[in-house]
Length: 40
Image (cartoon, rainbow, N blue to C red; front, side):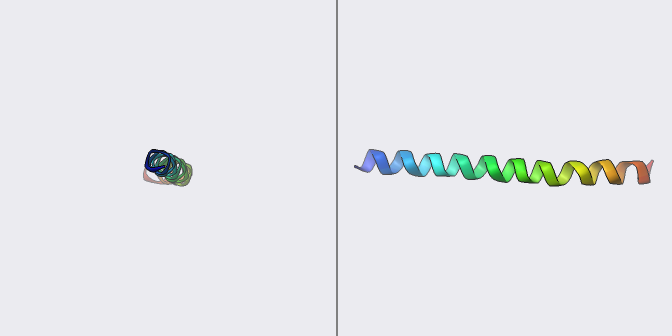
């Protein structure tokens, strides 16, 4: 049973990390595209 819990926790961590990374990338990319032309 402990092994199953560990696997579920690890899977949850991986999923959360992937979602957060994708969310940050999705947010930061449009900002960079909109800021760079202004700076240039």
